[in-house]
Image (cartoon, rainbow, N blue to C red; front, side, top):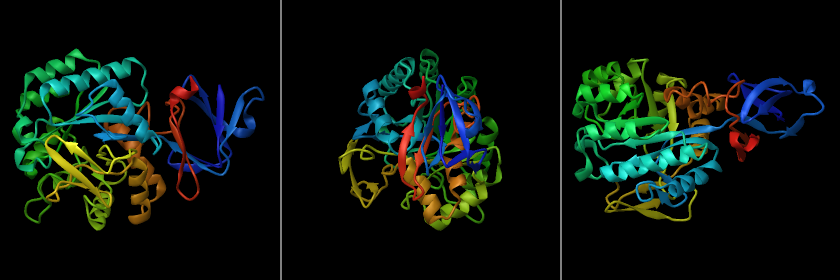
Length: 377
């Protein structure tokens, strides 16, 4: 057992002092006043710093100069996880962009193997596609987009994938397919869609409770046609992920959306591409050359292609540019995505019985350390 303390620890949404986390076998076994720690227990004091839950990124295409589509292997997964760990990400869903079924199967096999090896950060997988609408495809490869396929259900049955997220266009997917996914505890999110308000509302009722990178690759929010964005604002059963990088959404629009949704329904994501935590300044996506200029990933014609931010960048953007409290920003990056993915009783907060994943940052907002529960086993 080890006790961990710092001047400020985020517990129950509030900063507390003079407390310590007792950690045993990778779990927080108790939270006690530091003066009550038995003399035989090792005490690690991080001093004048802040301890908060580790961050959970549910949309990570790549990092460390690796794109999951190009390296759907355990090695590729670990390289991506390592690149993001230094920015506070302790849990992630490696994300496969629309691809062939064989690549999907390879990625699934790699995730299952990584989890079997005890790779703590890999909580599951996010299939962003291929069940999308070509009219809102963005940089997804159109020839690989399809409406549905029952062999995908077989793939889900074949592998132990942990938490599975699927982004789809509800207008193109039959209700029976959605029912089959939900029967397998798959979390569903609408994205790359042309759905109108009524279709989006019906999809939420069917169990498509997420909206992937709100505002991007979907109809706009209009006065007489609120579309899926309006459905997200109105229906409190829904969650929405956002890319807070200053490129995907105007800061005023993003601030208003986050205020409407609240931190308990807003999820910060990176939509990260290979340059995050890597050395490269560009990369290849299928047949497209992607350039990174001023933190913006784009094709030659200016189409956005993922993002070049870390989760800590997203937290800091919401804190510094949008003026949200650090407590709300951290909730949107940890507890809320955990709850959305059905992991809210395991990760996302610092309390008894939860995994001992936490970050340590300085008073001026710099990540100092990222700690995984596996370090304490």
